Length: 305
Figure 1 (cartoon, rainbow, N blue to C red):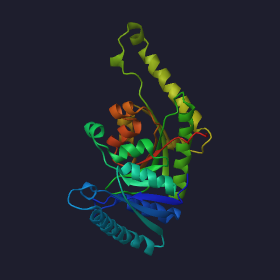
Figure 2: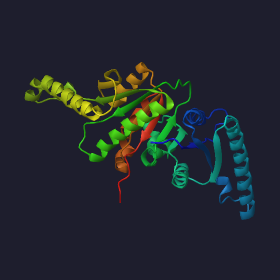
Figure 3: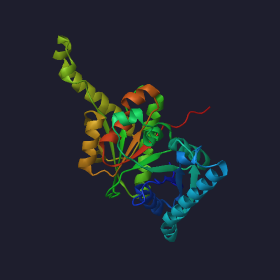
C-alpha cells in the first residue's frame, strides 16, 4: 500500500463540514501525499428540462460547475498554504458512484476518502447509496470517514483467517501489511483481531450434539486460535496487540472498537452475488452500520489475466 496520491470525494451538499478532507489533510501532512478534490454534480432540472433550450442548459451547467470549482479552490487553498500539493476536479453526471469510479480509473489514486454514513436495510434496498456501491466496487483502498472528534492514535485490522478461499487468505495478508504500513507511516498503534461465532447452543436440537456441545465450542476455539496464530506468525506483532474475540463480528468488533479506543478499523471486502449483498450485506457493511469510527475497506489483489 502507498499514500502518494489521495482522492477526496467532496460532498457539495455540506458547506460546513468535510470530514474526508480533514482526514486527507491529516494523512498528507504525515505521508507527503498529493491530494485531488473531486466534486461530482448533477441536477435533473439542467438535464433535458422543459424550460431551457440546449445552449441555455449548457450555459447554466457550466456556470454551476464553475461555481463548484471556485468553492473547491477555496477548500484547497489552506492546504496549499501548508505546503501540500492539491488539485481540484469537477464532473457532471450520475450516478455518483459511477462518476467516482471513472475518476479512480483515470487518476489511479492509492487511497480514496469519502464521508461515510450509516443507512438502514430498507434504504440500502431501495436507494442507490454511494458508500455501499463503493464498498463493493472500489478497486483501491476506500477510507470512509465518520464525522466528529478523531484522535488518530489507534488502528485495528479485522481478520478472517478461517476460510477455504485462497483469494481470501491472500486478502488477510494484505490487511496485515496495509495496517502495519499505516501504523509506521502515520504513527498509529496497531491492533489485529479475529472474531468468530460458534453455533449457539439454542440452535442445537440433536441430543447427541447437545451432549458434545462443550467439546464443539472448545474445538472451534482452538481451530480459530491456530489459524490466527498461523496468519500472524511471520509478522512482528506483540501478543498484547493480537486479539481473538468470540461473538458475531457486528457485535464483538464494535464493542472492541469502543473499549480499545480505535480510530480506524481496517476490513476486507470480498465481492459476492448482487442478490446476497442486497439482502444481507457483507461483513464490512454490517460492521459499518454498527461501529462509530472510520473504516478502511481493502479489496483482494486483482487476479492476473
